[in-house]
Structure formats: C-alpha cells, structure tokens
Image (cartoon, rainbow, N blue to C red):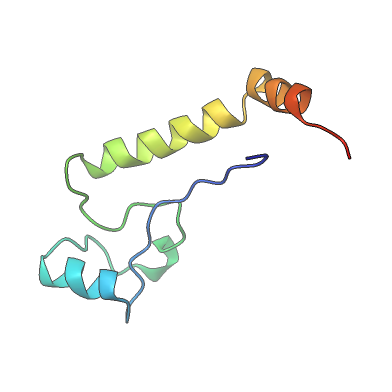
Length: 79
C-alpha cells in the first residue's frame, strides 16, 4: 500500500450503523459538523472514545513520519 488513509467510522443518519448505535444509545452527539471521520461521535466498544481518537492519531503520526515516508519511497518501484 503506497498511501494509507485513516478515518473513524461515521454513523451517518439513515445507515444501518446509525440505526444500530442509536438503538443501543451509543450516539454521543448529533452535531453534524463533527460527522467527518476525524471525530468520534459514538461510544465504541472495547475502548473509550478518547482511546479510539488517540489510536487513530497515532496511526497517522506513524504512517506520515519522515522515517516512514523514506521507507516507503525507498521500497517503491518505478515502471
């Protein structure tokens, strides 16, 4: 994979995910400006919302750190 992207799941209204999380009482906000893949708008299972956000940020930092970029460029092949 040349350029991974990370986003937090977004339970958009009208989707099965939204309906399930809403019925379980796990939607934490209906501030639609936060429904962007960079904010946690539901209560995840097996970790806190803060842990999910921090783990996502950690993945971004690790992937886009200078050493990681250099490794990917060194391993890429031209055709």
